[in-house]
Image (cartoon, rainbow, N blue to C red; front, side, top):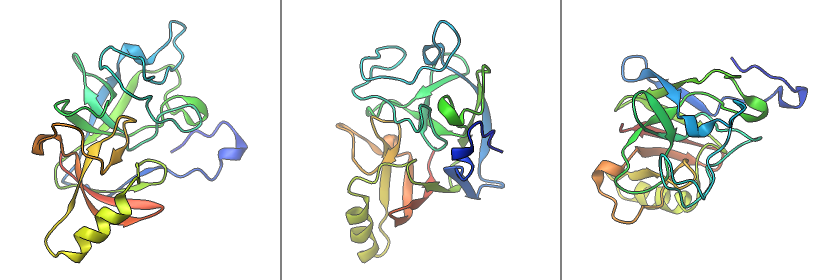
Length: 191
């Protein structure tokens, strides 16, 4: 349940929804990496100049000042997670389950987040929790050829998208696109 603090957000929907995850997916209890908190304990979104724990080339995507459910996270030291930087070779750990920071924050001053993991689980991601750059064309091409699918990767913003990182291998695929519309995608999670 969203803890709405502002009436203008009363119709905000959760951007990540489980479709087939009852036995295929597992919620993993993780901790936000310390780099995502300011010294006063408030949330700090990853910016393009960050170097720890992951070097970034772009700022992480934020909605109303915070992270959104469905963003790809990578595991850091111990049980901590950080928004994926979209670099090939950085292993995706799962999809963020919570709104973190900003006006939609579900955590407050807690650092515990949920991360959804589970190959073969199927998820619906609502806009803006995915990068749709070129996805319509990729989906149309894959739909025309039976038996093909569109691999999705973590983008520099931490969102799922179709842009392939340089030097990517099969291990860098986070999900496979099942269905695309301009407002939502349905994906088969691979991590």
